[in-house]
Length: 236
Ligand SMILES: Nc1ncnc2c1ncn2[C@@H]1O[C@H](COP(=O)(O)OP(=O)(O)OP(=O)(O)O)[C@@H](O)[C@H]1O
Ligand SMILES: [Mg+2]
Image (cartoon, rainbow, N blue to C red; front, side, top):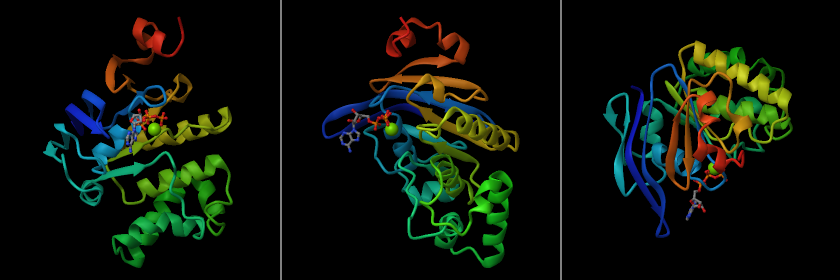
């Protein structure tokens, strides 16, 4: 098991945001967490990354307890994170944005080149725009750039917060294909979506979260016939 979350409870400003959340992701899987706005998806990813301290529960990465570790420690251990607000630096070029996590880790020139080559093999479009300012590219390309930044340090697991949000169907399907390729290369992916369209075809398993609680776990087809899930997404 690459990621194990057990009985996680998170409070913010006195409200109970995550309620006994348990889930697991196996090596090589693509798992999607779906839930409406405000359900607790970002809170869960930020807690896994160490930005938020849980009140109780444990988070294990490759069998090791990482609960309470700092974001830097979690990232060094091999979890990449692409936040929903992208965090792209407007004053830096596309290439400088990609390099940033490597420079922060004091990688040498050779390792930076290796990182860039890897990213350009996954997202060739970023290579053609490498000198453009990070904000002068399309929404879909910015999304790829944000994922590239999570990927360039070669993590074994990446957490993607709503990677398909706001993308036109064609971009959604292109990005979905890229994520599938990454999975085929052995990367493990855990991603979120606030709607049913944002669940990629390649997802092996789905968890549904509602008001901080996991209310469903299984495959997409069965999920769509689950009464509680149908109620949450207005399908009844
Ligand atoms: N810093 C904070 N302080 C207090 N409450 C917060 C804070 N951040 C989030 N919350 C609350 O926690 C709940 C879960 O928020 P979260 O951002 O995790 O949801 P989400 O599923 O990611 O939603 P979205 O689809 O809109 O991104 C919401 O009720 C939100 O108002
Ligand atoms: Mg969110």
